[in-house]
Length: 142
Image 1 (spheres, rainbow, N blue to C red):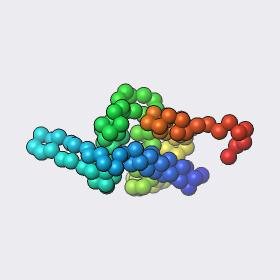
Image 2: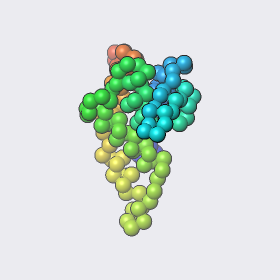
Image 3: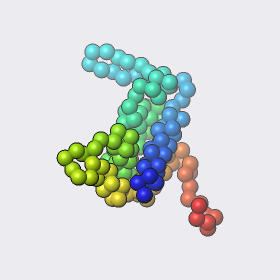
C-alpha cells in the first residue's frame, strides 16, 4: 500500500511541476525585486533555481496574467498538502523516539485525500489550460 501511495504522490506532484514548467514561455524573464538587489531569471533559471511555491504563485501569475493561488481555497490546500507529503516521502526522516520510526508517513498515507487532491490538480491545470484534463465519458474504468 505504501509503495502505491508513494508512487501516486510523487508522480502527481511531478505532473504539476512539469506542467508549470511547460506553461512558462521560452522567452519569458521573471524579475524578482528584493530590498538590496533585483534578480532576473530566464526560463531555464526559473526551472532550476526558483522554488515550487514561488513558481506557482508568482511566476505563473506574472507570465500568464492570472493566479490560481490568489485566493485560499480547498483545492489550493490539497496541492500544498500534496507538496508536503511528497517532501516527506522524498526526504524521509525516522522518528527515533517512536517504536514505529515511520509512523507519520504511514498515518499520512492512510488519511491523505487522494481523490480530492487529484481533482484539485485537474482544477489547477484547467485554470491555465481549459479542458486540459477532462473526465473520460467512455464508460470504462481505466
